[in-house]
Length: 248
Image (cartoon, rainbow, N blue to C red):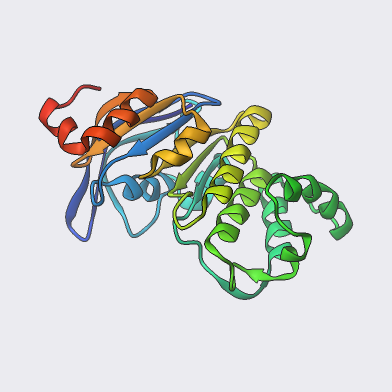
């Protein structure tokens, strides 16, 4: 379980997170929604210990272990994973080399090129990724859909306890969204991974059927519910939530 207690944080002396409380049990998909600038992406970065975000209070625990003061790499080794909204391109670094090293670091084993090909083959098919993509440079010249599918490939190889996906559906077409949604469901079902998905859009959620949806406004979770809450947001907008006040 990921447990967040009264988490506060600021960026460049501006308070962004103002007391986030959230629990995500094993194997559940939780969605974070809210308008721009309310702290959704900041939450993901603070959970991963990004140095550009200053945590000012609160506690983060993973499987009852306090990870609040751990560095980013230590949190990753404990089982946290963050997929970026805008993945970084690294010309000169082949996707195959990056993924094989990532797999070795996470699992503490060295695998040969031939062994890694066997490991990755089924995952490529699941995500509709051409094998030739492994010989390209990391995210260099990739489309939005290709980048997001590659993020999901990384996730399936790392096998974290909790995956935070920051707008994994941004900049991709409906077919790619369905592929990503199917991969999330399969990884959850086969590996027991919990997901925290940050999104603006209902379409991905129609494919996913999340366990819980949380609305963040002004740095706090102000409302939690199921897909009925998403439907209401599509019809009424976030002002409807503001008028009703905090109802966790």
